[in-house]
Length: 102
Picture 1 (cartoon, rainbow, N blue to C red):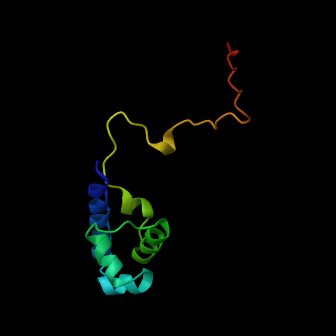
Picture 2: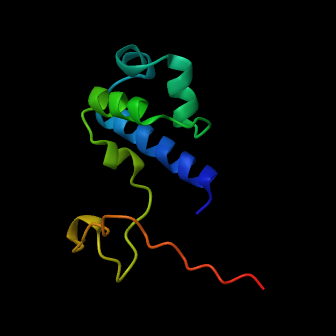
Picture 3: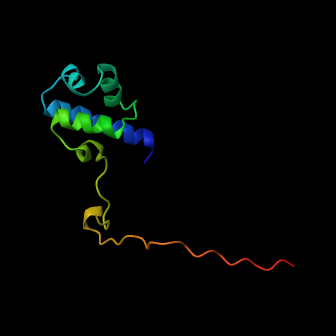
């Protein structure tokens, strides 16, 4: 998926969340950011920071995940929360051996 498509879908999710909360753009913008930025985000023309997404999610009573969830999980893919994960090994990587100069 292209990044511009992703931004448009996030904007659509944002608009739907605002509609579900029965709020106008002015009401949400007053609680989180400026009206102009909110309008641009809803049209998919902005790149919101995590802080902006967090503030919008709180103002709309949704989670950030609901705002950025733009595609259904692919068949056969295990969600991140269900994967068995192990942290990477700690310590330094061994230095590669140098070849002797000729």
